[in-house]
Length: 250
Image (tube, rainbow, N blue to C red):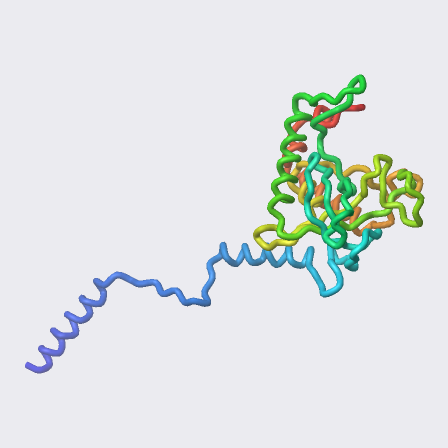
């Protein structure tokens, strides 16, 4: 009798537990694949651009901080205005009276305006379309940035100001690498982001010493060229169009 009773109880228990829905347990330290991928992406960005106590490191090259504008030194600035996709005006945070126009080093976004018979007129077609897209991209990043640094680069005697290290072009703009801290706390190089996302081509930069746009900063040169190869391969924006219409011969 007892044996039969135990058998019945065992059968009822088995049926009860087998009919219960399975519950998946998730522990606090468990991460899904998406979180892991996002963390890896952030880690890569952090390795690409990061801050030390006395310097900024971009693509494994160190640029010391400086309160004054010097070639290959990082100076913190604030935005004054955006002219177009590759030109903006900044104010030196350490000298509020120092306001300069900057041309983003090594890149060229499509033009939105050109001079015709001593008058500026809007460009047309694909050139204007991608010029406006690049301008909006730059404006959005700079206006929302928490912090901005400029890293002036040496030019090959275009500027009128005679200095040991000339950082000005023929239009008296400072040629510079632009680094910023986004509103999402990511450190990025804006020049590179414009190329990477297909808003700009690599231009006005060369490793040929006879070229007027020669630079000794080969680290930065290849940093941009690698981004351009990526954008071309993936047909990003300008590279998915007739490039000759976006950059017509002058």
